[in-house]
Length: 274
Image (cartoon, rainbow, N blue to C red):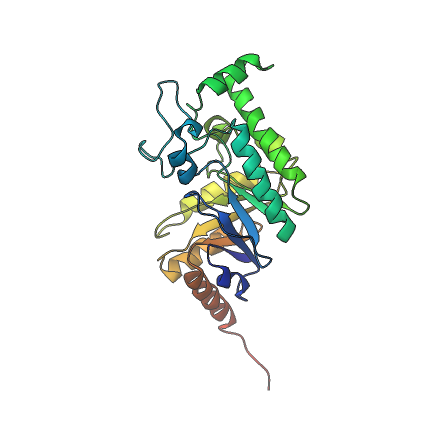
């Protein structure tokens, strides 16, 4: 099964795709109305616009470093997951999306990195909590958010995972307790992005790692923008061995051309009787 992840509504109905994810809120803060043709995808705690508008929303490290694009290796700004007002807004977006299509995908869920967040609110809530372990408290914050989102989603709930299957890594990095989240998530999505896919052995290593780590089904999302079709075919064939589906991100035209080539190659050598 093959699908697409897109910001363009007209691409959702292309017949080559078995499933389509449509960004109704992305990391820039851009919002779009949900549409019935695609599964709504919501960037949760990645939000440049919110961070720019209100710096108090931004997580800070113990050294006072804000989780913004100015930090090294940060591609977007984050919002602290303990901000109740922001979380309520996210849940409203999820509920509105689920009113249009019953399935919803949560993207960018979690804390930015292991060193976040040490804002006054996080420090206070941890001190007042039942937890002695900082990472366990963070994981509980995220699991509770996903549980709340689950209550608003009558269909399947999808959740994006950082592409690191090594035991304990996403727990420490983002506060994602996979075992706890599996109670609420119907399918995970693992973006395994590359600009070229000239080799695929590493893709297989990551995908097979998630196959071992997860009891819940997962799909693999590939980056399709300007990738050579032959290379994208190779990557898709590897990913399809492990994922429930293979999703192509952000270049539906290239994805469609790839699937057409795969279908044509599959028909080569067939013999038809007279």
